[in-house]
Amino acid sequence: MTDQSAPLAEQLGFDAGDRVAVIHADDVGMCHAANTGAFEALDRGPATCGSLMVPCPWFQEAADRAREHGGYDLGVHLVLNAEWPHYRWGPVAGRRAVPSLVDDQGYLPRTSLETVQRAKPEEVEIELRAQIETALAAGVDVTHIDSHMGTVFFPPFVEIYARLAIEYRLPLFAVRPSAQALERVGGGLDRLNEVLDEVEAAGIPLLANFCADSLGFAEGQGAAHNEQRLAKLVPGINYLICHPASDGEELRAVTPDSAHCRDFERGFWGGEAGQAALDAAGVKTVGMRALRDLMRAA
Image (tube, rainbow, N blue to C red):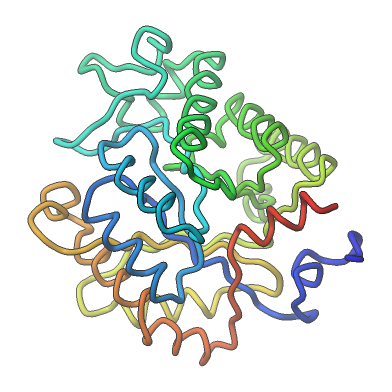
């Protein structure tokens, strides 16, 4: 029997002090290029899991592949924004059901701040629940939930996020604020810590560390950038995001500033270079399904 008082990594079978990474492919379903890139990374590794953007036009392609082939470790990338200039999407629940989540063009708001300023919490819950239910109805074996652009971490949305994780018995992407963040923000993160206390009390594990900066490198600097990211990982379970997608006209039109990063991450986290970097750094890997199965077995 697993010792539930032990650190999460040890409950998952790793040794004390091991640095373990969830190599997470974000934005699956955003566009066709995101689907081909993400599934290439997941098929070839070392990417371990990913999450689906249910409101996006190419969600169904990704869901069909997940259902037909099985075995993919996929969660729901909870979406409250449609940020791109010329490629956007509306709410799954429908514009009439959640009017506060619809901008003057009929889409989800572009920025997290706009969502916070205009969205009613009760409509946010309707929309996030609809995204999870749509993924389940499409036959996806949902393994976790996480957040597009971090919008769900604003109060009072974070309470909804936690409530859905508890209700659906799903691990969620969440880490405790660092001491530096607490000092910088003051008491502004107190409610987040209280919500995370409730999550842990419900038997949902929290992650040790979040490594976010997947798209912040110039062309030709991808390998060095990602090696530096691996060097920052801490003992325990780290959440390292990437955005693999296949280069081409579609990707360059949708994400002109980050297309080169996304295509690099497709090859790096779906090939030998990424695995070699992990080996050199002494980092082990795990997916979110392992966390879900652990918490549901408790």
